[in-house]
Length: 213
Length: 213
DNA sequence: ATATCATTTAACCAAATGATTAAATAAATA
DNA sequence: TATTTATTTAATCATTTGGTTAAATGATAT
Image 1: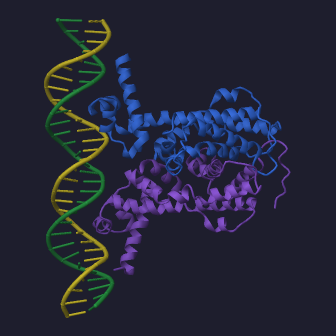
Image 2: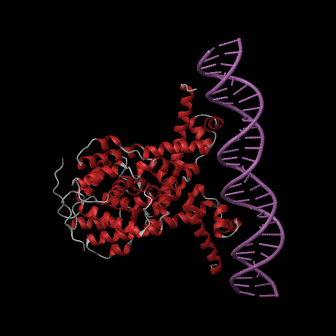
Image 3: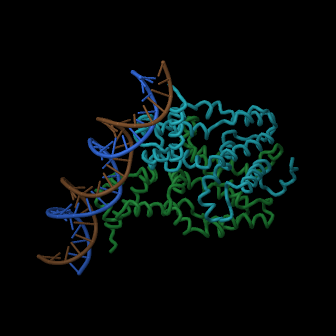
């Protein structure tokens, strides 16, 4: 019982719900508003998804997967670590740029999501934790002497924190530095460079001799 | 017309409201719940604060100021930059540990807070942006050759990102790495060390000769 | 043409929500 | 003691919210 009309409507609802949930969170989103956003009446929302909880869970799952995507292509490309790191940062920043609304939602709903969030974490337990491919890649780099000895988990937290924070702080940055747009090419190109450079060579004076590739 | 009884009640309400707003956000918080948390009846909430919006704005302001405190003591201490940086990281992490609930709330409500958030940002415009003491300290360090040339703003974003991210990701970390407690002494001591080391010397192989102070 | 599913409208439901009210009592102050 | 302010209770209010209903119409498949 799948036809293009029905599937189109369902997708339309999901897309609308996504927009509203990302903006308002679950608590702040209204079913009537989602219906309006999707261009349908509210009864149809319930026809397709029954309850707000169900709709929310479906949307949450999509968003969760999108945010915690493991970026497998570059993880499998077997690049030297410095090239790998540069590409990781670039792709990660670009992904955040394409979906700037997600970061605020993700962390808030991690806290608020209760069972829903717990379910998604459980579903992705291994790939987020013990079998995290990024963890493994870093561990390999340490063992192979590509980078000095670091704690892989802490290293990941550092990289991700540096990539994500400007997007979280964007509402402030755009107001107090009026010429700065976190989503602009300039800012992100600079961001990519500063992150990589900081990670690779640190800031101690005298660490500046690195040749650009 | 300020007496200890009244002020006590007002503070009690504010403290309760803070706990509930931090946990549920503005949208999810209920006046009846706040009243219960404060051990009063709901009518008194309105007697003191009139509306949910007003109560929220007062609480938001407190929390905002707390989160964006400029840590003036160490900024004024005129330490060498590496010592300064170590202390900044330590104090910042400790501050986050004392108020782990704030981070999720702050960034979500930056997005959701609308006029309220805008007002607070405007109020703190200069100290967050153009006159940011941390920006100045970094700029001075660059000019004095204490550290290599970096973009001060990007550098701040990196430091803050690295400090804040584990707290944001805590709901995940605690589930997928069951032995890890972000708020524990061990984790934070390690975090402090890894952040400083990464910032100071980077990860390129061969950057490992730094003596511990 | 018939049957089934998708969609709409408008009204309705039950519960929850922020807020108010009236009256009484408790506490603080002069 | 008298007055004023703080606090309580229980009920109420108006509105909103997620969800339901009945009937009709539109779209699709056979």
